[in-house]
Amino acid sequence: MKIGLVLPSVPGYSETFFRNKIKGLIDSGFEVTLFVVDDRSKEKIPCKIVAFPNYYIHNKTGVFFNSLLKIIFNSNKAIRLYNSGKKDGLSAKKSVRMVFLNSHFLDQKLDWLHFGFGTLAIGRENVAEAIEAKMAVSFRGFDHYVYPQKNKNCYKLLFSKKIKYHVLSEGMKKDLIANGINQNSISKITPAIDTNLFSNTINNNSDLNIITIARLHWIKGLTATLEALALVKKRGINFHYTIIGGGPEKEKLQFAVHQLDLTDNVTFTGKLDSEEVKCELQKANLYLQYSHQEGFCNAALEAQAMGRICIVSDAEGLSENILDKITGFVVPKRNPLSLANKIIVVNELSSKEKEIISEAAINRVKIEFNIEDQHTKFIEFYENY
Image 1: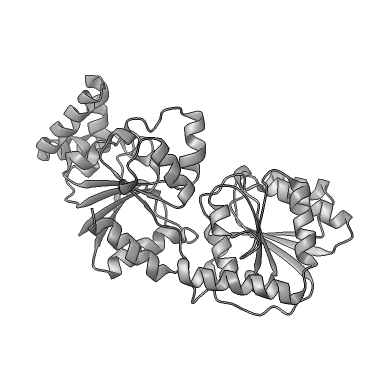
Image 2: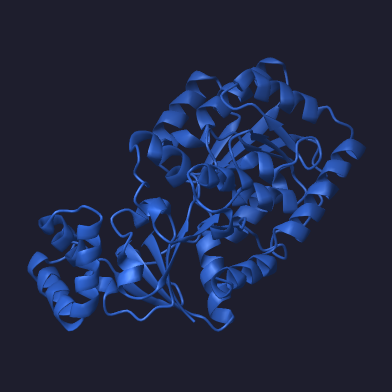
């Protein structure tokens, strides 16, 4: 079976969901072609890579003639794509433009064309049908919860097509059903982790070492996290907080650390690979993920697998990732005082109470969020439709 996976770029080292999925499909005998908007990444991936025709980063004349040749040699598919655009109400000019922008798909022979994010399917709703492939779309976090807030009805055309959807949580599934999607067309497949790499390790350090793994982006709620930790410090509790990840908010967060008098308590490590992340998690005894919005969060799974107590916000998938008071703790988002109080309560739990929660988290991750189970579900996703 030939799968075409559409992504913004070649997935980086931290995008374990896509890298694990691609590896799992290839190991199971599938042929995977990766279509990327931006092909400038130096990341390595074990499959064929096809770049979108991009008039901004490539030679414009070369891109035009390459697209024209593909349209000519695949005229039947190009005509089908053009006619689909017209049927959807596009003008002749916009329909032609759509054909050129999607010309790199026309010479592909695929069983499935799977868009890794909902936003990537906008303007490409008819491509799969034109090349006689089945169409799948994954919804994650930003594309499902945030993008439609600024772009009303952006998925109206997409939702009218025959598509199989992949979502990360029951909440996402309910949202799609509310938008008129048949529940039989929706599969929930959660993220999964390598439970052999991220396995339980004992931490005998009595100091409070806190950690978060996240992009330095406003949506991750890191400013609110720092405000909560400033309250914890004012209560006389000593701790160290490590933030792993890079992103556009670093300078803003560093200034917040300074203003909140947390300079001696906070360390920014930047991006780390999996082994380095594991080493940092081994030093920690409390994991925080206080996001404003979150599709699910692999990092929280990794922390649980290693027996770290997790406190997360009630943002979307996080409340399914963590079972409150059973495998960790869930607190209201955008409420630093609530988070601070929960950190203090958790810190004062007895060793036995912490051990019970850690063991419950470890066992649940091993059973419900292992890579082998995820691979099986994706194979079923493509074969049973």
